[in-house]
Amino acid sequence: MENRAKHLVFLGCGLLCAAALTLGVASAPSAAEGPSDGQSSPAANAPAAGAPNFPVASGARLAGDDKQTRFILDLDRKIEFRAFPLADPYRVVVDIPQVNFQLAAGTGSAARGLVKAFRYGLVMPGGSRIVFDMTGPVKIANSYVLDAANGQPPRLVLDFEQVDRTSFVQSLAPEGRPELKPAISEGNTASIPAVTTAALPPVTTTDPRPLIVIDPGHGGIDNGTQSGDQTEKNLVLGFGLALRDRIEKSGKYRVVMTRSDDTFIPLNDRVKIARSQSAALFVSIHADALPRREGDAQGATIYTVSDKASDAEAERLAEAENKADAIAGVNLTDEPTDVADILIDLAQRETKTFSNRFARLLMDEMKTTVRMHKHPLKSAGFRVLKAPDVPSVLVEIGYVSNKGDLEHLVSENWRNKAVGSMVQAIDTFFAKRLATAGPAK
Image (cartoon, rainbow, N blue to C red; front, side):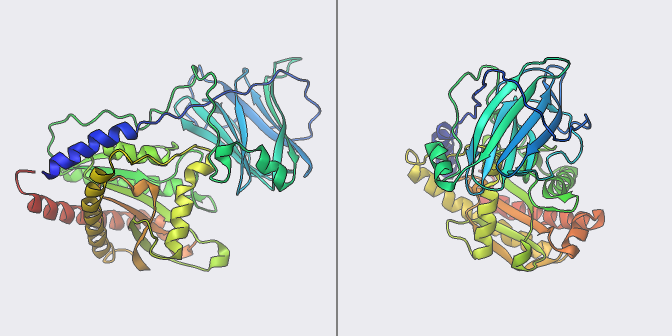
């Protein structure tokens, strides 16, 4: 009966979860580019995997002041693009086809005029994105691509102008006010494929071993928290890969990674990966940080999903993690549930029970080997934990804002201990679950 209910959930929800992320175009005619006093950036390492057919961005610079600021991107060919503002915090997002960024290290980290910083990277197969953090409300006064001329390369040019809050809000697309959901153009998208990251085929293997999905948070254009040269996305990826290797070495389970390199994966796609693969357990790995004004905190914390956060810190963290897609400029809409509300509710109740059970087992094992937060078990509305039929936890393995925790996070010895305790908890969880299920399941 239980299996039949879950099967119905898959059938009902599978139709609801299909979503395609597309990019539109907004290319303006070429125009003469005025003089720029910005510094040019020589070609350097390429963070996004490039192929010969991808356009190459070889330099990027800012010019201007706190009234008007210009951004210039040097390219090897003309490209189409779409630019739009977002509010709270103020940002401008530029969607472009997949580009091989060959920009100097540190490009985008320095403030200039209306731009506090900008970041760039691959956000989906066939699509790259540039995100500008602005000092305040702005409008995109001009945006165009220049033809190559007089020995100069093609260039993407954006002019930002300072405006007041009222004018800025009025310029936003309706879905961008106030939920921070950028408009998705329905223009020509033939050259840019839809997201394929989570389009994994359903499991057809006869392998009876439980499948575990490991989800290193953030990635690509989304660095997560940061301390010095240590970024959350790299720390949790290293931890996730070590956990995968240890689990696979036991031979008891199959493992799927939501990402195994520096790739941006939307939150909903991470959930879809687990559901499409009929995962038996989903473990999301993160590393938290507290703003300086909020004092200090340390130790690992284990989260399960809940509509009501267990405390203010849990609510803050869930809000920050759920905004990861918005920060990268991705349009996310909640999956509708009206078609399968009853079936989903039944599955969610059982899933929540298993999630809480695994969280307690994980806490018991981890506290014997690593430092835990003073309140190690918490709950909040993390979008990445909302699969109705996959037991899921989110583990904050430490605080990058705490010196002691950061020393642990970069320590291979500490990581080995933490990974070992997590594998032990996984063993205990499945031993109890399989024993309870019996041979029929």
